[in-house]
Image 1 (tube, rainbow, N blue to C red):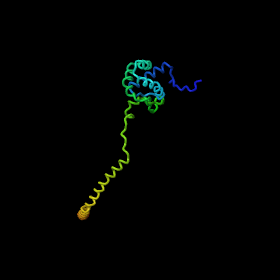
Image 2: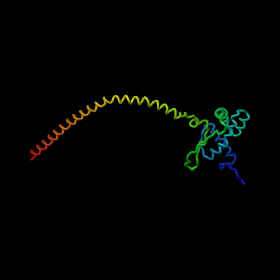
Image 3: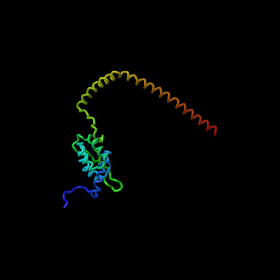
Length: 201
């Protein structure tokens, strides 16, 4: 009975599965992020993380051990030079799996698998916000000069009272000027229409 055997065979024989995982691991080391199915991403995480741990110890023995899995010299060089120095202070958990939408062809669940230290969006420290107490104390100091400015504006209000009187007089003048031409135009129009009617009859 196979109770508790949770290893995913990925519908492949052992040789095919090992070759596929080795190629995917080399692609991950080279490109730092690859897109694959979720099941393959989980299998690749189990496969590649021990290799990254071994790459921290740069000895001939560890290089040969990792080479027996990956079988590509360029990937070994990249792993032991760049990746190992970047993950030197991280105690495991070198990869991250990000789920994506399903694939259109067969509706397979897709995912990104990436090396954690190479994704700058998640690893950069965001600037910490200042405490609210400090901000409130500064705001109180800023409000005090604003109140003084408001007092100065209140002192200038007598000048503002004189301005509406001028505006009112202008409005009255405009009203008077508008009424007169309208009446004359109406009278002229009625006179013209009466004259035309008389001539027409």
